[in-house]
Length: 195
Image 1 (cartoon, rainbow, N blue to C red):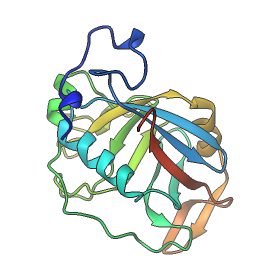
Image 2: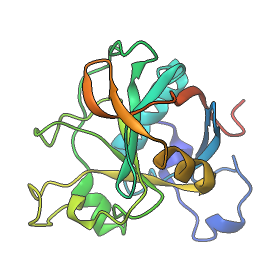
Image 3: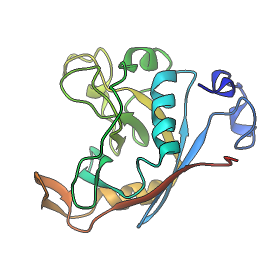
């Protein structure tokens, strides 16, 4: 973990991107436009480091948003354009509880880790909330209570996020529904201001 990710300035809004202590930002460039994400390592350190390691390795380049549900979320990061699942590292611990205590909730524009029924199964797949999905927060009795770890938010490109969410969907690859009929390709994910 990079030491600069351990410190968060209370004036983060006025700190230039890439400055020491600033929250890291990444550009998620798709064939429909770019979504810029700000990540919060002070509130979800393992999740952010995991995501950034996948970014550095180029894991997300050429993957697709394979699950899109308007009013709910857009999910990607696990399958290429032919719906072949990409290999991942070992799963990480779910930081949803720590995140919720730090104010990270599954609200419109936040990014969280996708997982299976096992709360500690998140690897590379993520989703961006396009609705307020409080039932996905840690401790909410409407789901399993373990929550889905939020680790950042969209700081620009909400229009791109919403455009993706409104695409017509159907079956595709191994999925019977919710696959965009027009493929949404994640062309690259890069750290903003990285040297």
